[in-house]
Image 1 (cartoon, rainbow, N blue to C red):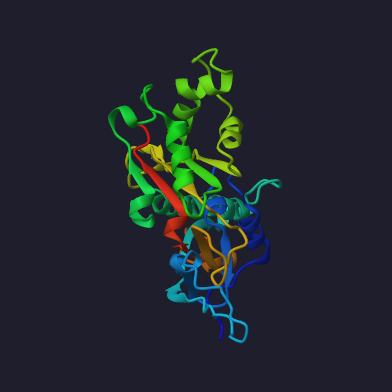
Image 2: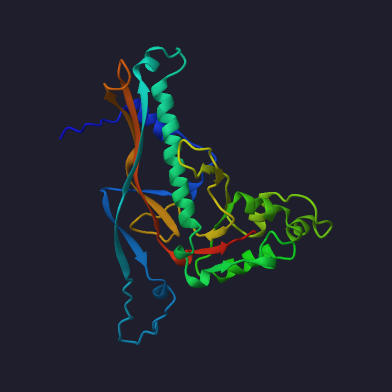
Length: 307
């Protein structure tokens, strides 16, 4: 079957290689390849891992058998893509060191990835993706922007309460800034000699025994095109503790969340004869993915961590 859109090797390589270092979605919900648009993923029963059957074996009896049950959930990847028009005049008159098609592919990829960042942030900072016992709403004096609060104690108690202990902490940018300047955190870093200063994020990672702390620093314009832009942080004033297993797939491995991906990110051109006097090329970039929360009990959510 002939498709009207054929990916271009060069432009696809640009789309695949492009990385915006401000984005953290791929670290928090790693990509796991699937063979088809429709796929199944494994949901685990947490109770069976902590319910102990009789292990005593009689002299002539057979040991008890354990049948590990899993639930197979059905889902489908979704297509996310954008087109960027490039007039033929721009291509013909481009400087030798500038490729308008490559630039369009890179800029469009940036928007595709920013859109994914927003989706992942909305999932991570959504109380629906956590068990009721693994979330806490902070307010007033308990918020980490209040000097009388105890953020290290809050996080430590949350980690101790998790059946699957988190290995990463996800913070909105403003939350990270306030946390690193909190008087009690600064005092813990200085050895009770002072409350002023900024604590290195690495200190928090070490004292909390985490593998990584991810800080969401990216911005997004929430106003429709054509109007004065209003930028806001993609990652809000919240914090999440997550267990992320980067080796997990849709079929095996416990992790808070992952991303099913069908094929690679693609890019190519579609001739557009009605673009200007001489026509042009429509640069298309897209990918087929689905973000999934696999194990709600593998996360802990602090809502409204700061005011």
